[in-house]
Image (cartoon, rainbow, N blue to C red; front, side, top):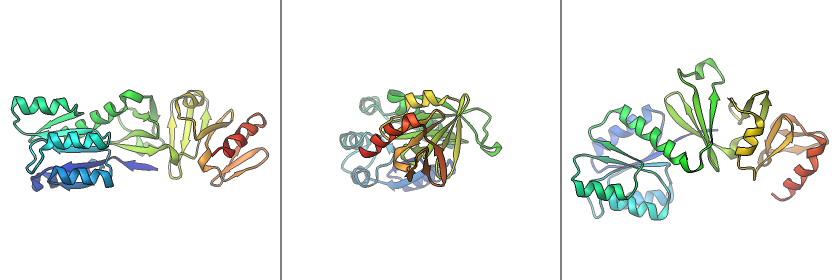
Length: 255
């Protein structure tokens, strides 16, 4: 299932915060909150962790944006994008020391916001990146440029039109080979990847995935039934190789 990227806005000028929220919604992202104080942001993150935080450097209140970022980093590994007006050199150096993923200078356009988010997602992936091309499933999905997908330990980020979406690996039902392509099936959608099943098998975190046939990898958590020569996922009967059946049963017993 595709999930929108979630962002928290921490901005003490509520008109600006509302404008940013509208821009994010226009881009297809989800806003988890618009908060004016760093203390509120820290509490919010413990209860509803976003994927990215948009954080004004010059927050009013007991702690400014930089101190807020430091406190956030103690409890969660969430990328920070700073929103900044005319900061002095000392403030900028303090902010830089927190290693933000991007800076956006006020006033900014929606395109600036879009690029900063995409840059941030790319940087999120750098340390554990596996990049593969996505081929759109229908003409409606086609962009001028090929879409990209990035496999992390628990999710895939996919660029779809003007936004990035995430697909949790637990939502994948099975993956089917088609010569030099692979079809990834979720409950609601199919993705065609320009990569072989063998390469996907090497790159996926395989604690919950297993090859059951030369043409199929399945999600162990999604199996409904194991028969003599096939497994059932949803209403799909997926062939089960005799040579791979015993390994499958062993893996199922350890779940």
